[in-house]
Length: 184
Image (tube, rainbow, N blue to C red; front, top):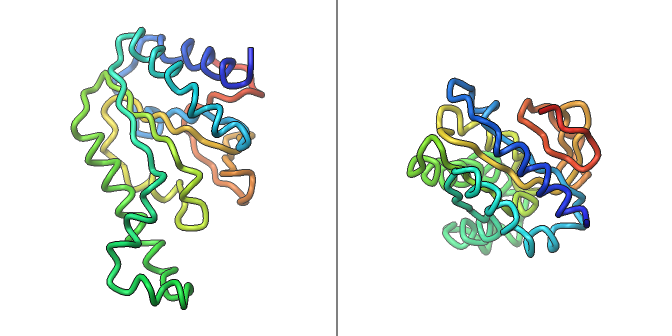
């Protein structure tokens, strides 16, 4: 069994448990943490996770953030200037781009029921543009079912490191990792 299949098995065990509804958005968020070098393999095997969710009676929706930055940048009036002077776009990334990503997720979440799963792929493409933690904070009150974030990086003592590159941040979501025993 490869690492992604192992992660899928842990997800299957987690998602099939009865769901409590009176939870905070943080408690309804699941981080599937995997080594960054497994991104392509994970994408190729993402149906394992979808099948687990659907088998447990939870409709599966997914969203991919891969094109979020280029789409957002293409809409900017001064896009060409930003490439010439990248420091000029920094503030917009930390506010407007973050808000655009959060709005896209919020829109998707709003169309889903309390028994559904929203799988988020492509968070690694946000690296250097905005913080995943800031996006999740701005989703407050929007998560009805479960938000499953496929997270290329690492997790240790509730600290997540995107692509193993940043200092990390503390977040109290339910982590599903390859290195930790599940606490189900």
